Image (tube, rainbow, N blue to C red; front, side, top):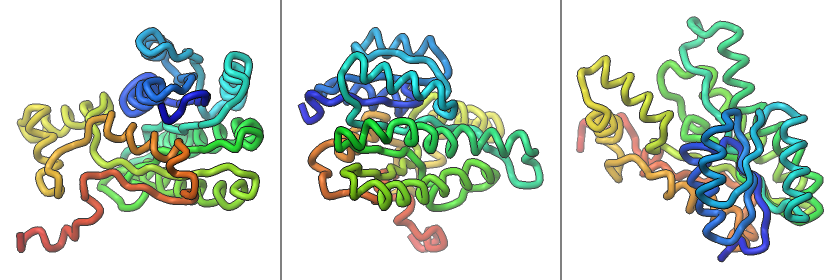
Amino acid sequence: MRLEGKAAIVTGGGTGIGAAIARRFRAEGASVVVTGRRAEPLELIASETGAIACPGDAAEPADIRRAVELALERYGSLDVLVANAGGEGGGPALDAGDETWRAGMRANLDSAFVSARGALPSLIASGGAIVIVSSVAGLIAGPQMAGYTTAKHALIGLTRSLAVDYGPQGVRVNALCPGWVRTPMSEREMDELGSHRGLTQEEAFGLVTRDLPLRRAADPSEIAAVCLFLASKEASFVTGAVIVADGGSTALDVGTIAFA
């Protein structure tokens, strides 16, 4: 029960990694508010885990303020923010119009910044922690993902800036960078890849992970376990760090695969 007596907000908490984090936090004793733009999946997670659903856009200050106020009203404090909301920003630069670019920045970078800014006063009061979910796209670039890659890189800078500025006030801030994870978003990507290559979804997952040292995608619960560590007292001297959970993909020199 590593989060017993703690209260957390998880943005993007209705599906995928966010939902897995909400489940694991609840199993470890935390009280949890899940927020996201779609009410239905939030309500499902809430009914399953006993979390509280608070529909809203993590990039909208009023919505985050409502989630923080709800946590304080119900639980008396706020100890952890998981800034997990993200997505959008696909396409190469020449194909990405202004609207696509702004959508990618808002969904990934603005959501984390606005959430952190809204939660910080309460986290300072509790000596709490922030986990910002970035991606391996925050460290390296894949093809045709200009906005997404740029925003995920920027999240690393945001993490370090927050850690430096608010560490003296007792707040820890770390970034978590997953690789391929089996989520509804990645399944849609595999379906798209499969339609181009004549592959099933499972075959597409096999294709994108065939050269990873672990040869598979992660289950969301595996990413939630890393997030739990960063949020818990076990990581009491960890701040400003970038923790990678990618099955070894960023350890691999792709130029040497031919020699394997």
